[in-house]
Image (cartoon, rainbow, N blue to C red; front, side):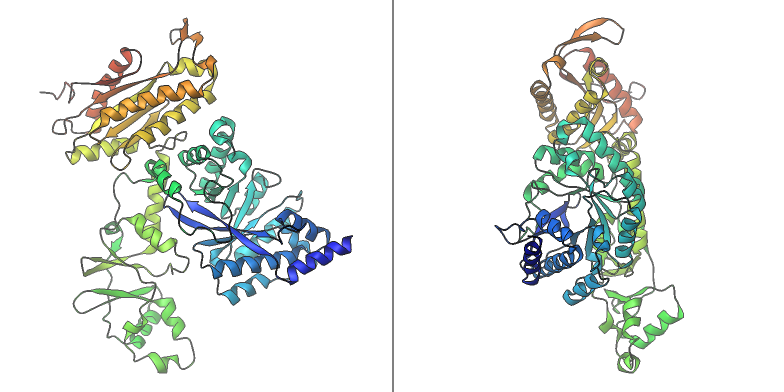
Length: 585
């Protein structure tokens, strides 16, 4: 019987009966496909059709390494044949390293044959068995990273992929197990675990992928929590010919993530552009080689025409590599340098935003990060934007936003809100500010616990995202159950009314009866009866000619909030005051 299974497995591998299906992994922030996970299938209708059957047979027959080589080859061939964008995620088990047939260098040989850059390959370390030999996992991870591959931990939080493995490997990606994703929209406990994983990953620089997403509610919950990468049936099912464009429902939901990631002020290339001497296209390649050799700090040189038009960039590494071959100096030294302009040159306008520049240099696997961006204004060459300065500025801005975001809703907090209001006042823009507060939230929290209270806060944050125009409006979470919306939408009244309606409807539909009618102590310690939660919205319409800073708007807003709450029930109250009394005259 064992010999029969060994022969069947041998036949499947030798006759190329393995084939790959691909499932996309998408980035919700930029709306692009990060890459594809390759999932291997055997002959349909046989006892070796599924990955579990294949690898169980290989493990029992001592053929793990041989099967994994065959799987990698099938995956790489299909990936390149279809010209799929992004990265290729390949599963592997560290136990294959213990197989007597394991041979180093097989994967690199496959990639060289297919001209697939190792930087586009991510190895997912999967382990379904107890792994006491943590050194084996560490060696596997280091083995691949030394060769230029990225590494991911699969099924984080389930089975044996725990915190110890995470801390010892420090991978490039971590994939949260679907146990924590399934039903996360209805489980406060699962949300807490995922927040914990996101927090650790952010601190140590790992990218987090949520896998196994199957419903719209799971997807929207994870977006609101700040997850950036998504994989699962809700995005797309595994297929031999997978989608190559981000699904429409994912692109539509990108608005959920916008308040977390958008800049309070637009940062442009102007901030990081420096003047740098250029060379004419007629200068000989030999002269430029001598320039590079005489100054080791010079990584690239912009080529600019006599009329001042930027033409492209000469890369130090590319040019010196060309001149490293025998007789190359004699062949190329007298040629004009215009013939050696890097195909990876990037020309951008000085008013382009930094994030667009950052995406251009980091999301193309073929891009040479040592080739800086040539900056122009109109047609005229201005200078050079160093890639390292662009990436540093983007990182600093993300840290600033993260530092001032509310950890529960992932919405901007007080500091970004104040900056946004100050900017609108400075520009003399007309806007309305709405303070949204949940009535009797403290008694509810005391009666049912912080977990239930957090669920209500998350619900309100998501409803606000749905009702505002995120292209022009701004949502801030200033603490507890308090949210502030800066409306530039002309129909702000209708949007506020819709928020009240949706909040009441959702509370009535989703909350158990005991949370809609209950007795507990109020703020004064008196026991009393409470009904369903409601929202009070106090609004102000600041006069940009008399309100000079966000402090003036805050004074108006505090009074409007108090009046809205004193009215009782659900109300939208608009204050008639457009400037604080101290400056109203």
